[in-house]
Length: 284
Image 1: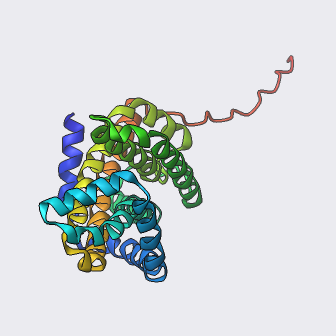
Image 2 (image 1 turned 180 degrees about the vertical axis):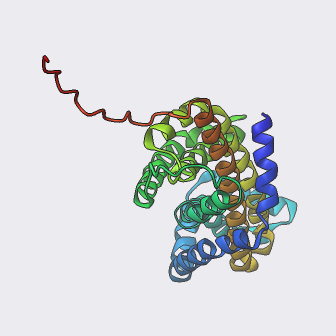
């Protein structure tokens, strides 16, 4: 627990460093271009499909009557855009996460390497392409789990437990690989993840809970539907900042754990030196 709190404090003190703020800009810009293009080209189509789906659902009819009874009839017109927003939020967050992991995480690790772990040997057990493939595969697994657990989201208390757990698992799997790719060998990374699985998952869950804070503001924008593009841009940058903080937290914790693991056994998982074969002694 001390290591978790110590790494949390150090990540918090570093997240507003100019270099860390700079690392939020490229993922933010790429996500804004991608999703801005999607919404620009297909917003009318998406809201139209959502409106048709809502109109064919009996629950929506009862909800509309409830709006009329309370005097909020104007909310009928924003339900379809609101549904599109709700469905888009997880996809946008995953996009920002993948961009942070592949674009910003190497810069975070280099920053930590220079400032705090300059004496830690780099054994390069992972690659950028390996991290990208691992992140895509983990994201696919997470999406499948998300779809399979959707019925449970209607049952208390699962609707409050499943999203942070899934987001925490995804963040922990993606960030851990990238945090250790430069310094740890493959064997060290696997051993460290096995040994510290639960603290790493806890960091991921806390990061997921932090990520729900901007989502609450995002969802509340149903009252300001006209400001949705501006709110979307602002929330993308907030997500990028939170994920850079998560990258710092994972990096601090993982590299400190790797340093301690090697200190306990300086020859940890190093391949043994090959001794030259001994020639038989000739009789004198």
